[in-house]
Image 1 (spheres, helix red, strand yellow):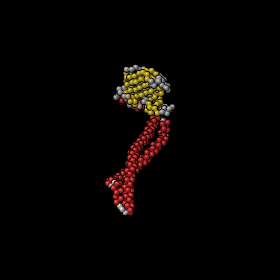
Image 2: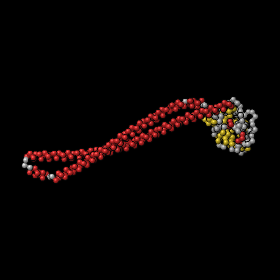
Image 3: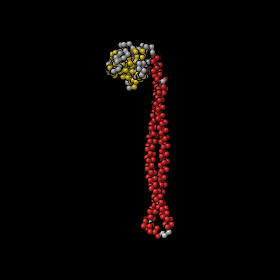
Image 4: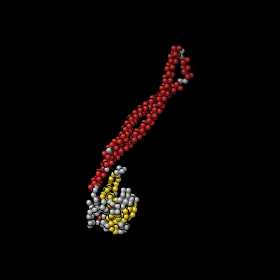
Length: 342
């Protein structure tokens, strides 16, 4: 009980020790949320760049189409004005100044055509470059979206893990506090009987109505002192919380053990950990007597209330002679202290 009280008292410290893990989870959540925000901004930037590139490609395609159209017209014109005709045309001009001016005009036209060709080539190269960058940005945006989905899922998983840890801590605290209260109540019940020799006085006679009507009225199976109550208790050596489905009654070796109610012997034999065990059936209820030295009845025999059924021993016991006593309603153990007479 003291160990469990300490456990409850310092459970907050246990929770504090878990806070390191919680802090790590929360930091992970914050990091993931920050990464989600960064990826979101990155996607916005990439989408904006994709839109810009798409517009520029459309504009460049329009410019390239215009250049191709103009180049086509110039190519057709130049095809008509072949080199031979141009030479004959220049020979017909008698004035040398006019010849120079004509050559200057042809050089201008030639430069215009070359500029047109260079512009078309530049526009074509720009189109290839823009389309390549557009492909890259679209792939980067898609990859970033996948990373964003992963980061969101990881953040969600971390949040769920954090919540599960907090719930477990709260349940542990509540469970430990409830356990401490139960152990405290059990200790109080034990204190009420400590030092008293139970079952030594006149025992009550059975009431009418069968076993169920005997609650709080059954005689004690042996004269002795209550040592271990029903329910939960703390083992003094290991500090472990143990559950007892019956009660331990400290009694002298070979003390007589008596039936608490009329019934029939359902079992009389040895069981590991309990030594010699006797089980009486009382019409849906059962009483069990363990660590007996010997039996005074046999299987199938009918017994009367307070009839001698065996003797206290230490068979299967690790702490000397005592009687382990259980009551069961069907297969479920019930607290004998609620059934035995005060």
